[in-house]
Image (tube, rainbow, N blue to C red):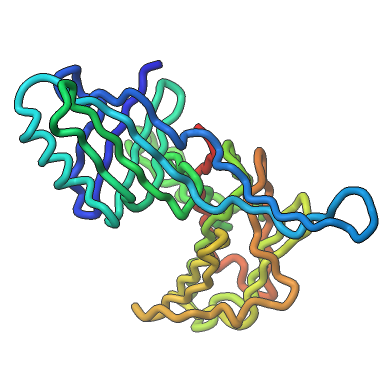
Length: 288
């Protein structure tokens, strides 16, 4: 199977582990499959079977086995050490004919056999975030006024639209990966100081919702992240960012993106027409 494997450190330095037979030949990659689950159970007293305490996936361990052939092996070994440093951040890009993804982690070990007839080695990387993420992200935009201005200009005097009025408050986004959180960005624009009041985003299929109580002023940008381990509600006003997670209404859900088609619709106590809402999503995979 043809694949491409690139490692990138926190400074942006890269090393291609699949260049040619005279460079780094990756012979095996462990950690492409879904990580093993950790399942804890307890036995019933005097009864058959057991009950579940909890079940989770702890972390991903990616192990890269490779060989080094040709000339200037010592120089290339030091180039490898420059990029792959123990305990330091590393980004792993992996692609085939059908998928192009990356994972992020920290180098546990980088070992190379210096005195063998065939120089080989392995790199062990621990990834606290268990997912592989698609290199390309998806975005859906909602606004009651949709831009229609375009080039080139018509060559006649017939009227042409500068914008279209959107009467549908629904946003549809496809998730081709596993269930994962996403990012919602609300931007307020209005001639009045108060642009909108208490916007709410509903999942049209489950009736779950996420509501931010209170007034949103002209120029405010609110970013909501619903990803596990990074759930935040940030208000940017006048260039200053503030945590406003306390403005989430009781009963709100950190809406996930389920596998397949997801439909959301928008409501507000007032000023929905003054909001632009953007959903940003990156497909995530447990195994590739």
